[in-house]
Amino acid sequence: MNQTTIFWPVLAHVLLIYIVYCVLGRRRYGAIRSGEAKAGQFKVRSAEPASSVTVAANLTNQFELPVLFYVLCLTLHLTNGVNYLTLSLM
Image 1 (cartoon, rainbow, N blue to C red):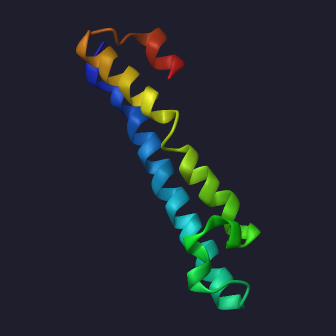
Image 2 (cartoon, rainbow, N blue to C red):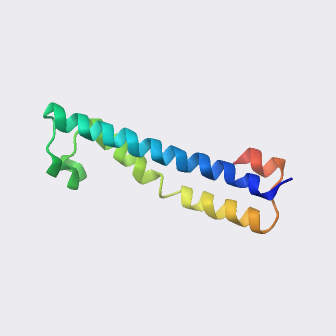
């Protein structure tokens, strides 16, 4: 099996992060445009409107546990441990 196939799940996760950034930007822009929030409110999450705070929390979560996922993918690649089982578990 090609050892670089382990990076497809990594690329899918990077795409997910970009999508979450886009959703967050649209929600914040919509909140500012509707008058629900002012631009300065986004500095502190407690003052952020509920429509965007959930997406902001999701974005924060994307940089916590997935770091272990990246380490595992890199380790599998370096040790030639990529097979159909490890790829399907990712």
